[in-house]
Image (cartoon, one colour):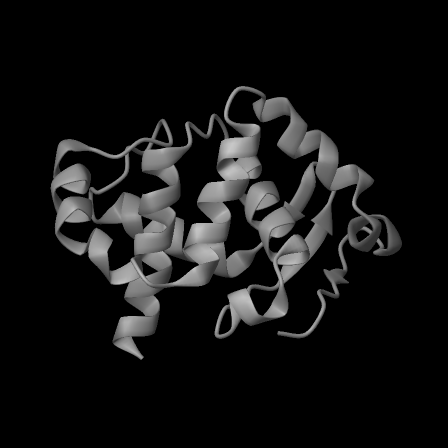
Length: 144
């Protein structure tokens, strides 16, 4: 159980190192797109629940993991960037995700959006699963 929780924290650290997220909502929207578009075999064991909001998709699990990272001093509270301690910690645990397919898919997807953050927030509203959901309700992702 502890390793699974650590997995999610390290995944967020990895994304924050690789991709300059400007807002928390962009991170939520990005992970929604990754979960919705990733092949089921790549996301086994990953079960984030997303809810449709006015500004995009929101996951209480992801927000909880992010809050943990901020409280522990690994991520800056005012910006989505790793602190010095966060970078040192990440360098020690980064290898935990080396053979995992979902983080690799996320990095590939992040590479597609690298220079156009606005596209992440824009494409969420165009995604069929997001469009079918009602505001405030859970978005039903394909089963893993």
